[in-house]
Amino acid sequence: MKTIVKKTTGALAVAAALVAGVCTSCSTKSEKTIGIQLYSVMDAVKANPEASLQRLAEMGYNAAELVQWGGDPNVFGLPAADFKALCDRYGIDIISTHSSIQEDPAQEEAVMQRWRELFAIQQACGGRYFVIPSYQADYTVAGVQRMADYFNRVGRVAAEYGLKLGYHNHSGEFTQLADSNAVMWEYLVEHTDPAYVCFELDVYWCSKGGKSPVEYLRKYPDRIEMLHIKDDFVIGASGTIDFKGIFEQFYANGMKDYVVEIETPGWLREKKNADGTPYSQEQIMDEMFQAAAESADWLSKADFVK
Image (cartoon, rainbow, N blue to C red):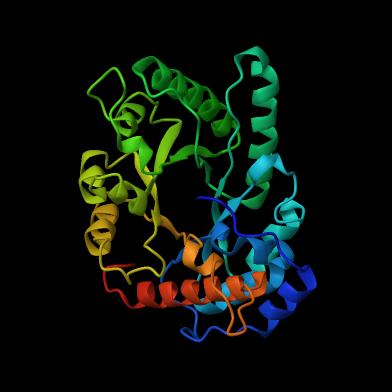
């Protein structure tokens, strides 16, 4: 995940655009499990959860990962049970969420209480994973060991709610530690407790970090339990990510949970209409939905995706 797109210009306008929107690439629901990180179209989901979920379901998405930044007790403006009911209505299984709380040794008890509140929300949504999308750490052996120890403690609390704590990477985690030859991400994997902590490998950022997602799937078959399937924009369009090898190895490892994540590209945020006016938030979201539709269509046709 990166910076969110511009602030929504009008909830009613977004809602109207969503209701009017039609998936041009997919007309029937996929028989495969195809997940999406709702961050991909987050502003639209916040404006109108039901219309957004319906539109995604019509594209073939039947699993989702949520976003709960800031510890909001609501899920896209709705109580957790209500949001889950909407997902159930459109056949979307909630498998995970993203949120994070930075360690604060001076307020350990308060921090753990905040985690418990977040875990209770995800438990109400029926999810299985709770993923930390990013974390500030000192890239030294001591710094990452402290991070690992914290994740182990938080993971034990997550287990009380029937959840597995996960960590999502960007590209920076594939650099060496300042005082060691160890790669930061590898050190973190090897120093967290597999009973309580797993990893959601973002295959795009792994590749951008100069590493092979397939090799990591082979090296850590039991630790990578989720994938972020991501490309430059539409999944499969760039031809630079070995999705076939990634999916085949992931399934060979006995894993199955993945979600598409589509970052809003800079060129789309800067796009203008013929009259020179900037694209509205509704137009940006419409293009993001179209990219999501094309991605679902590509995955549904890929014979290596189950």
